[in-house]
Image (cartoon, rainbow, N blue to C red; front, side, top):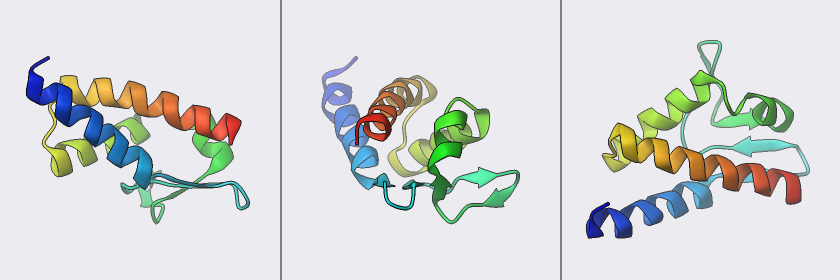
Length: 97
């Protein structure tokens, strides 16, 4: 990893995590990227229980990849690393409030 990547990638991860809003009262996760469920946009919201059970599904990863590529210019390797960290952080926040 280059020094530039060491500085930039953690900032990208922090930004995406900070833009992800977990509404515990309504049990909704608001993503900073459009999530398409069965080809219908979900208005950036994804029901809590559905999110938790589907975080490994390709449609969420695909939407995350598109966002990281289009907004931050990340390559496939960088996106894969960011996704793993993002997923862990969001799962932790969901489980632990």
